[in-house]
Image (cartoon, rainbow, N blue to C red; front, side):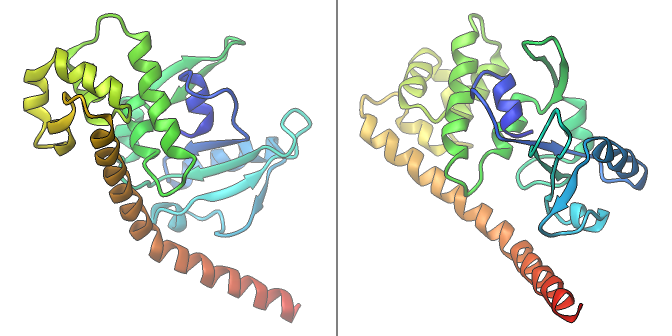
Amino acid sequence: MGGQACVLYGAAEFSRDTDIAVLASPENLDLLRAALRELQARRIVVPPFDIQYLLRGHAVHFRSYHPEAPQMRIDVMSVMRGVEHFETLWSRRAQLTSDEGTFFDVFSLADLVRAKKTQRDKDWPMVRRLLEADYSATEHPSAEQLKFWLLESRTPEMLRELALAHPSVVNELVGIRPLLRVAANDDPAKMEMALYEEEQAERAADRRYWEPLKLELTALRQTALQVEEEV
């Protein structure tokens, strides 16, 4: 669901870690623990690998020490801001193939884009590239793809081209995404400002989402330090 998925979608050249979404059930986490043991993975930092933290929206972090994946970081999540429950994500997943012919179940493109709308600087250029790559690779888009591009694109030129070609679709979606009112205008600066303001609103929403979770992590770190001092 992270950088590796972006690589498979053709929007990135490499990723230093692997982010996975899991169904947070006791049975499933037992299976994941077995897989992590095969990777000789160790948990790093907080929180603990416990279902309660996954269900509250935390990420649990590991590092692989297997010779074939040395130092690969693995981040595990189950609940994320702005995306559906795991069962829905799984039902509309995409299966993509690596250059070596290995199959991977990954977030649908729409879900991946939603998951990337965070407060992190590195995620927003990735959202833009994901949409541009999908747009460039599609010769005959469906109605749903047109709506997806108009609702999610971060590229002024792409939005203008779409708005001029499909004004009726823009009229249908402008109530959902107000900046589409200026998409057809020949004013890149105005569109860039509208995109910037939209991005800032998403970043602020992500900070609000993570604020209580970060407080929990701080408390867990303090407890861990106290235990180490006592030992």
